[in-house]
Every structure is written in structure tokens, then in C-alpha cells.
Length: 240
Image (cartoon, rainbow, N blue to C red; front, side, top):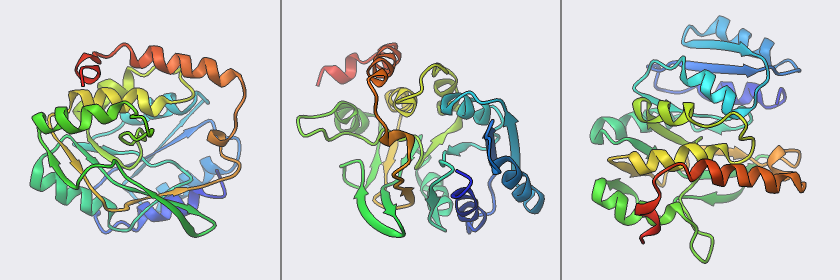
């Protein structure tokens, strides 16, 4: 993603909130991404770069979470962007509510134009423990119209003490659906969730994205995800 990385990092570099740590994980990238990461580190003391051999997204996120020092972690994919006030908005919500998870809406962008906007399908606001069980849990599974909570880990600010064990528990063999394997247990364990309608995350729609490709082997990758998620106690979800 050499072509997209500078834009991604600029969107982080320009955040109006300076009180953050930035962790860049170079997962054995074969292009100029390692050099670009090191260049940004030189001009911004908040940035730490982790260089590692290629292990996939789950492996990269595990490496990143081990370096995290903040109370909350926000994941950003290297070909996407965030709005200039995204972290400030997350900080404000967290300060006011002390929630475990802040989930923002998504703006899907292709060639500079918005092509879609998605959210969690719930009213904006704070959901405490009983509300989480009543409104969030049912949406962890798809309804007949395939509506559900966003399974993306990116675009969410998650309390580090909640995220870390769940992220480290995701098997590195999961190469499709690794987000879901971390997000579902986080929601199951969350005491409070804030749903925001703010389109804080800009997802870059790419024709060459790995998620756009399909081959029959992916059926077995989905089976891996089902087995991984099944390790969690889903009884409270399936009772609805």
C-alpha cells in the first residue's frame, strides 16, 4: 500500500489532538512502506515503528498492541484515512462517558468521492450494560436482511485492557475475518458502548483490495473464523 500510506499517515499527523502514541507496524512489506514509516518517525516523536517478518494482519495487530501504552487503542488500516478531529472526538466521548468502546460510522470513498455511508444501525448515544445486552448483542448476529454491528476493528476506540487479551487470543492462522474474531468477544465483555453517527473513518474502496478477491479456499478460511468465534460464550447472544 505504498501508494496510500503517506495519505494515511498525514491524516494521523494532522490530528488536532496531540496526546497520543502512534504505532506503525511494518509487516514485512516488500515495497517502500518501511522507508516511509521511518521517515515519519523522524519528524514526529509520537511515532514508534515496529519492523517484523510478514505474518498477516492478525500477527501485525498483535505486534502493535504489545507496544501500546495508552488507555485506549484506535486501529487504522494503512490504505484508509481518518477525519482531522477523529481522535479529539473519541477523547471527548471517553472523557464524558468512560465507555469501553466508541464505534464510529464509516464513509466509503472511491477516487475521492463518497460512494456509501455505513453505521451500526443503532441510535447514537451511550449503551450501558443492560442496553448492550438488549440492543448490541442481537446485532452481533446477522438478521434476515443481513444487518449487524460493524465487524471492523478499525474505526473503533477500544479500552486497551479490554482489547489486548482478545487481540492476542486471535489465532495468527486467521487470514480472513480476523476483525470479527476480536470485535465479537470485545462486545460480549464490554460494560458500556458509545455508538457515534460521526463519519470519522474514511474507508478507501480499492479494486485491487485483497477483500475483493475470491477463491474456493476462502470457504475453509471462513470455517476457521467460525471455529475461532465459537470459542466465546455466545449463549447470551443466541438466546435473543
